[in-house]
Length: 339
Image (cartoon, rainbow, N blue to C red; front, top):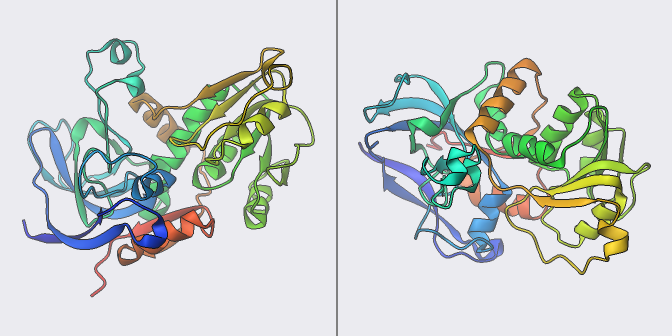
């Protein structure tokens, strides 16, 4: 099959120490039930940064990150359903579940103890090709080019699930702490559903984007929103913001923590943070039904996807910019040959 350019996590550590290495790898062969995909775009997620820096323990040596992949089916491994060579598809974080445990059977496959993930348990999209199980790829909605479709596959899906976990009532007041790739999509979904959205983030650039997208207010994350919140989502991986966000909730409100990694949460005071039936809950991955529901929503309600493009050769720079909050919206790698 030849060779391809790819990035591997060589030695997890601070992004300034260049834990990623660009290399040449054999183009993978699809096994039965898998498809080989030529990558057209791969968005860069904060989870990729956590993997590179070692906040998440490596599941395999030299993994290729990237789990927001849009590409073209190039080869079928057999038993791939109705997928055909040439189909435009997307690959997301969730790669495999067992299908028989009590979580899978109850519709909570995101909690499957045997789940596997793209870019963590198997090589992902920081490369010119990747393989994925046909049962875990998605047909992408028309109306989005490859670069603007890629962030839908994690930033969009996880924001969508976080909204569900936050149990925002119709016409409710939502607070978003942090305003990167996922939050700027979740905000648009909530606004389309009639919510008043208040964005709390340290970035002045992100505050301006939030207001441009229709947020009711945008201010610093350490401050208070202009009104009590019915629900809030914490996108920033900063545990210190948990009591801040809980304090901003109205009675009966819910805070959902959307990240896979969070720094330590300081002590909570029951009377100030949890009493009056306030709820704190986490978000763990997503189900395939979440993905299908969100992509259908994105087709019916066109979303403004803000992207900062990078060539594949600059994947390490994209991660460094993400770590330093220099990325507007979502960073997206476009794996076109540089020669």
